[in-house]
Length: 138
Image (cartoon, rainbow, N blue to C red; front, top):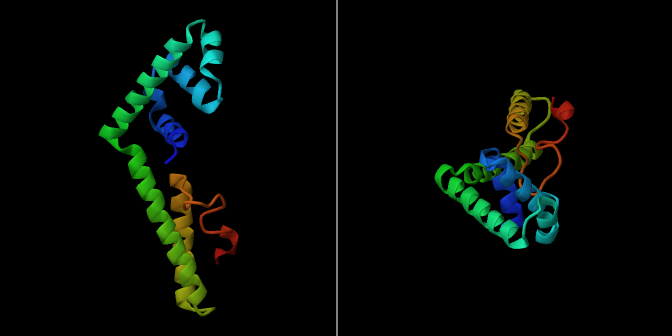
């Protein structure tokens, strides 16, 4: 996983545990793409101080992830959801129409879609709704 993406995700999970200054500097650097010099100017400090703060903050985020594994669990859930989504799409293509099985399958798809929405999950590599248009699910 690209370092920038990983840091953004770790910040999503653990950012509220950081001090306000750590949150601000981390956000300016990773989320707003400001340079160390620009952040140093805004914070009235040195570029080296900003660099050191970012390094300590990254280590802290990685330490918390090493103990709590929230990002790892999220990624595992996302992969598992992707597998379920692909299996449902494959099964849907094989079902005959107007059967009790099709009705049960549609209920299952709706349940998975609700679960995905509650967990804010999308299959890896997809930006659209996890199971397509829910209105067309039966």
